[in-house]
Structure formats: structure tokens, C-alpha cells
Image 1: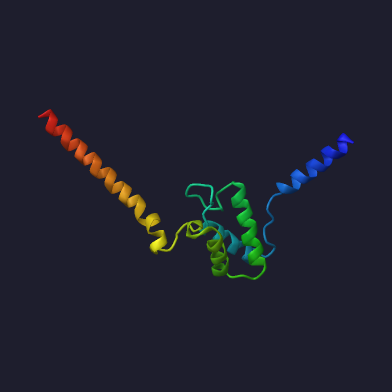
Image 2: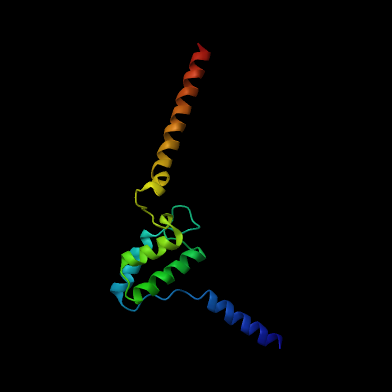
Length: 129
């Protein structure tokens, strides 16, 4: 009985971690690969679902392939994923009011950091004179 339980568990776990199946049509698979490189992994930092080994990235690759197989366009697939995850799913989110922090945030942090370094060095020079 234990052997049967172990075999069933192994089959279930094996099915859950089965490798992704590429699309049969090479041109459709090329489209999928291009889309993978445009989409950000929700759990990774600045990594596309193409480059990520995270489980969610694998799930997203499966979703993209399924939608391509259903005949959806790249724009329709992007729209579906943006509706589900927001603009942050895109490696290059559009510039709009809701994503302005994504575009300007790093620059503001860089400028504030530079200003702090400049003022600290100036104060240090003034105190050493």
C-alpha cells in the first residue's frame, strides 16, 4: 500500500513540475519567445519571464503559449496580462500617470543621493579648513 501511495505522489509531483512544451509551429514559438522577453517576472527584480526560473514565470510562459495557440495577437496577450497584473508586468511600461514613479523614481533617487553626497563633501571641506 505504501508503494502505491509513493507512486501516486511521485506521479502528481512529476506532473506539477513537468517541463514546458514549446509550440509545434516554429513561427508561433518565436512569437512566444519574443513576448517572454517583454514581460517582467512578478517575483523577480528586473528579470523577464524568459530569463526567470521562478514558478510564476513558468506559469506565465504557459499562459502566453496557450493564448498564442488560441490565435490571440501579441497586443491582446499583453492587454490580458496587464489587466491581471498591472503595467508593472511589462519590462517597458508605458509612461502615464500611474507609472510615472517607475520612470522617474530611479532618477529622483539618483539626484537626491548625489545632492546628499555633494552637501556632505562640502560640509566636510568647510569643517576641515
